[in-house]
Length: 308
Picture 1 (cartoon, rainbow, N blue to C red):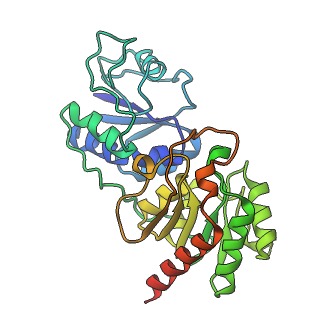
Picture 2 (cartoon, rainbow, N blue to C red; picture 1 turned 90 degrees about the horizontal axis):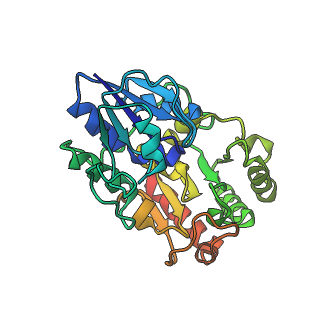
């Protein structure tokens, strides 16, 4: 029996559906479970232990080589486009949220105010599976960290609305470095300019710039072996959750109640309130209300706690 689940989004999106995926795996032990994700996340998808096969997917483009599909699970969105992507695979059964465009499909209602982890757990629970929302941990990566014991600063984010200014990240990095801690700066291939600016302004030296040359498995190893992660509402924060690495997370415009980490002492969430456009073209006003001094203080408290 073949199962295909769709989650063709980013790093943080993948990590928030791990509990739901593992519930499917436990509930369907004799099925072959395939997860459709972007090619760059294939290794991390396999590390969840919840999938047998990875199908490379990009957004809502039609899936290739679906093969026979007995059960299709929409872990991508509310529909209707994501429903249609899976319907084209001709599954015998579709597990998905209800949508008016598919009146014959019976599924739970979408709740826009629900935390992303809880949302997908509720979906699979509606179909009889038993998810554990706290089942977010990942196993240690096979590769070595490029900077063991470092403080990781990640200035990038998926949209300008969620990007705290580089000058402030640089002030934070410089203050932590002045306390004797090793600091590295990360970023994807499209975030090298931001990372280099932070490195230069903080006076860290070019070796501290890991941007554009650290694929997801190496990033996972970096976070797993880090002293602290400092970032906005991004996939790096979810990796810190997956490896129980201490983190200072800057939220805005999306409330942490929707995408934040679980309530654990190692995670510090900074948020001034409000609920803006997460896809906005300028930094969210609430995010800009977080001063560098507050982040520095939170980071140094966390570092002192881990050495106590």
